Structure formats: structure tokens, C-alpha cells
Image 1 (tube, rainbow, N blue to C red):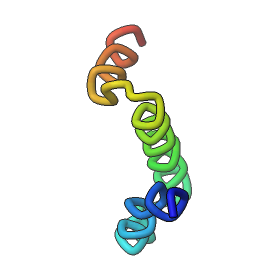
Image 2: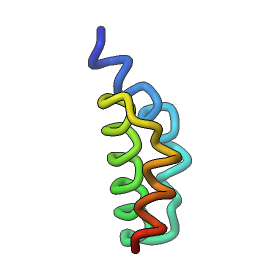
Image 3: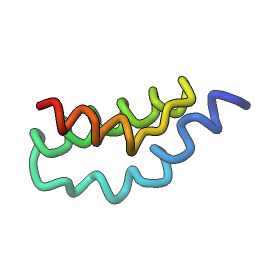
Length: 57
């Protein structure tokens, strides 16, 4: 049940991501979504984390 809830957002959006434009765009989306989901699991503010990473780059 927990695993099903964890992938629900991904499963719901799958149809939209099918038309990402290119394989590279789909890969980038997967990386960003993985980071966001990891933040959620670690109870880290994903928006603040991504802003901090972008600033450091």
C-alpha cells in the first residue's frame, strides 16, 4: 500500500510525460522527479532544495 501511494503521482502523470519531446527531455524530467521524491521521503522542502542547488550551480 505504501509503495502504491509512492508511485501514484508518477503513474497519474505518465500519459503527459509520454510526449516529452525527446528522449533527453524525458531523462531530465525523470532526474528532477527523482530528486523531488527523494526530498519528500527525507522530509526536505523540495522547492528550497532545488533553489539552493540552482544558486550553487
